[in-house]
Image (cartoon, rainbow, N blue to C red; front, top):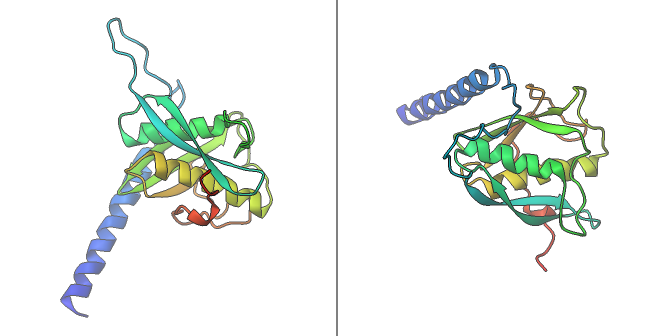
Length: 192
């Protein structure tokens, strides 16, 4: 084996260990009681939370994804921005002609961004399995989430989806969620 190949393998292994360690350290902690993405209590004299613009992606009746720009509170670190953007996505669209990407009752448990990978942990507010769907609906749900995160948070280029703290092989049984997900530009509706 050449020295260059050995160095590349060692570097890749070290990167995987860093991501794995961050993942296990972050997701092994109990969730905060106030809930993910909850704002800290206001202190007297504290400034209003920073506002920023997120680009949320929602399905259309044509089976594609269209963006909706939305001003959100609480930018700052990348993980908080991911939580805010995904929470807004889960709340549903405000613009006419866009459809909800996910059914009601889902929430962001936690988010973490490490080396360009956003780990997003979803769950139901009362517990339970992921929402059932057909293959096209699952594709639009996953890509709505991935496009929202990668378009809204520059530090995130890929998304690892978790359900109740566990990475599942598939969200609804049709698509592979066992690896980091990349945005698929083929699913974007043409700009008006």
